[in-house]
Length: 570
Image (cartoon, rainbow, N blue to C red; front, side):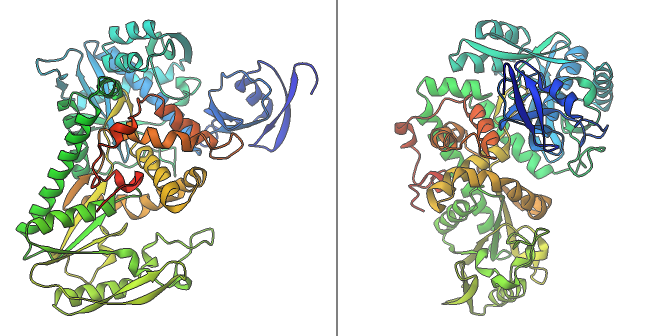
């Protein structure tokens, strides 16, 4: 390297290019010729610069490695989706100047959005504007017009005082409260067509790249539909899921009742010394939910003898099983908790995935014949010997423990396939009560930046894997995409089969997770392929005020959070 020039290795084509200090990623992209197609899988939206995510206007300085990102990469998809939200925001501002857009929570096909009055009512809430099909058509047309104009997204640094004024003028008071609660002097703001907003990550260069999206009415609002990962020329299919939507909306409403409308108000409550009060209220809510599930089981105990509990990774299935069992015992039932993992087939019979690795999350990895036969025997009043799976040897072994269901006995089993009818096709489905547990957080960063339920669960898993399983945060992150693919295949399609949903999210958990997760994430080195994801999670956690050790001590030993941070007595 001589003078101001330096060599940059491009991961996409495996070539090395000469660059100068100050050259933008866009200029380097032109030299490579990587960005050649019209498909979203060929269009570059951002780049990893030495494993750090940057927008294409970023100037290079002694960079060693660049990887340009398309829709095929998770960070490329996030850039696309964030930018699409800004276009939606501007369309709503244009059509409804006396209202605001609220992006409330994730849906399988995109984001659930509402339009609300800019002013609060007497209860402190913003009344919802019920969106009609005509409204949706107008918003879609306004978005298409903004995209057709191919307007640039720009980023500026400003003082927090100035940002507060801008967001309060936009009636985005939660956003203003967030910046105020962080106690910083400066922040970044994005602009589109002269309109300001904040987003927690890079945007694409211009609106003209956002060619694929759609809107569909859902309840009082609508869903902003994203491009499909498998076929980005089309949007994700929309499958109505009323049960999960009701659960998310219920949690969102409860947050409002608690006076926590976003991370900013949560930060303020913690700074004002209200953390322990919030912990107690959240745990009381969970206890009521568990009791309500047990009440349903008790009321139909003549019909239901088997309870299946399912949920994605780190949703708290194990704790939920034990808490439901405890509540059933209070009512006079005798719960027997068994893990479905005991029914794995021997290792050599385990199906393999497309890479030739054992697929332990496939339905065929379970001995379905044995499971179905034993459940039918138990329902018929017969005694069975529950198997015990030796994970080290990869074999099922006799447990020596017999099981028979007495008059007051309830069998509780948890596992990822528990909502799939194909798991026990020969068992009378009317004798099974199904519970779906997941951390369905609908707490938002602010009005139009929602918190991913997947990120919530990933943070839980990073902490638990490191504490219990000896797995490094780096390895947990690198395995996460594979875990998510398994969930999309084995769990999410069957969510609506549940008789009841249990939301394991807790209002205080992100400030608590920050305390444990930050030091673990900071151990990941810049040279690691997990570094960009660690940085993304750290930037998100940076918006939260962490709980103190004394506040964490107030979390009861029966809490679902103790499954992840330790100290559980269930």
